[in-house]
Image 1: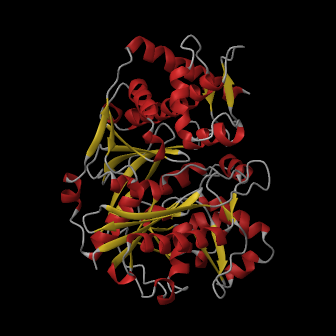
Image 2 (image 1 turned 135 degrees about the vertical axis):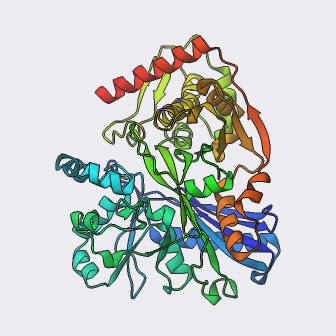
Image 3 (image 1 turned 90 degrees about the horizontal axis):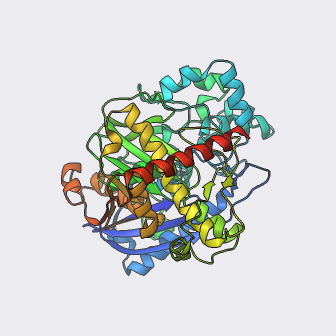
Length: 494
């Protein structure tokens, strides 16, 4: 058995990638699925879409690789985090659509909890803020709004899970109800210092603890798949939330190393080692990974809209047909115009945490057109990343003065990566393998299976594709970033 199947279940699509024992990509398959928006600020997924696209792409990737299931030593899973599902333990049927991490329906609940003074305690234990982003208030909403759900949960009839847990349940035929430490750390009800579900927070949210899955290491035994899925039972040996999987895939194993992933949103993580570093700048203190029972922590900044801003240009404004068209448009933009786009379509994430904000565009003239909007869209990602790294520098010394490792689909844009380096005033390293989320999941599974080397050896194999270095002069950098700051302030004041 010389191959690893990585399942990468994302916000807009599911992917499966077959890696060989050297962690080289052999084959892949991807399938998009619908997004559901039942009300303003609400985002849902049909759980059957999550499952069918995962099962379908996994089979397709195996077929494309030209291998049999007997060649697969292990499965690694990585997933969109915080997205919340509850299902019937007897039938496996969800009681409601999945509530997606972007969903803002519990904003009033979070505000009420803040007003009651609960946020300091919750932040101290979970590293998180009281925001609709996280799973805890989503669980409460489901139990409050689905008839009979809380009573059924108290009787032990229901199970909660983030997407990884739901997939493990489906893959194993309901034999395993488990999650890993990184996904547990995003639920708002997991004490990351003690490594256990927090009974007091669960009581505060009226969440029966019988709903919750067992928490395991990132590289661990998560059971085996049903034999009918792939023709044989395959062990599931690695699990991590998407951003933590990318941190592993980027080999950010040393304290001080940073990575930033550009998918639907943007997520920057700074490895802080064994230290839980509390943030003074409304960043998140979270778990980077847990191996052999040892927890490594991180500071994280989350941007809700990164690659999604390009999707907006395509699907909303319809000024492009494909994402790659943004680069030539940005090159053609009028340099005399300084259009600023604040893409707060679903609120502002770190370090602002303003779920009530909505997007805004500043500096429009009669000559502003698709080129200027495309440029402003790409620049908005660089500006938001700098917001995160400025906060990290403040929280953890000179963290943002070093190299930033980047990955995700948006890093294919040389224009966007060069602007990122320019506005940060720091090198930006793009690796040979930019799909590091799936790579991290594969590595964790391979590590547990005995196919992959320990972290120090894996770190030495990380390969650079291109380094972007700053070309912008400091005066221009300061002026542009100050203009961004004014635009954000104006957006928050509306």
